[in-house]
Image 1 (tube, rainbow, N blue to C red):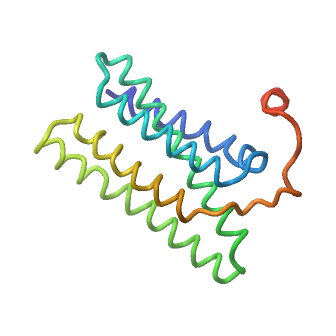
Image 2: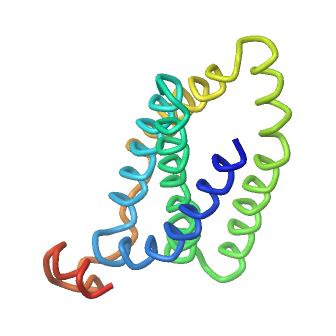
Image 3: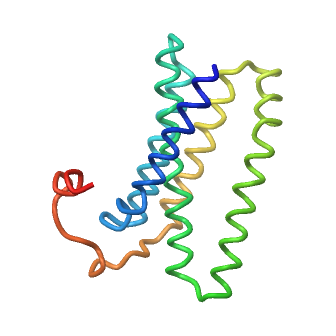
Length: 159
């Protein structure tokens, strides 16, 4: 099970490396929505995983959600002044830290009450709520004129 944590951490680092460039190219909103959707699919995959290998693949895929934090910080910067932006970034960092502290407590409670698979079911349901909220509230902040041009294959080859 240590591989579940290590795989998630490795993929999170990789996602953080490329998510900014991808959001510059394709926009903040699409990157956030796709990363949330991937997280939901991966969470459902963890619930339904028939083996530890399949579970580990889906657990690592859950790290797609990491793109949302960097995209959120850039969106805050693009939509706020200096003082307001710093305050909003502080709130985002605080929420990120609190989630990391409360996650094991809530996860342990859910595990004790309903079993470990229920944790990923709850994450999927929360992911769906975040996806719908993001679809309704998240506006594109990257201007079309500032985005590089080209196709997805050209982008992949360039990175």
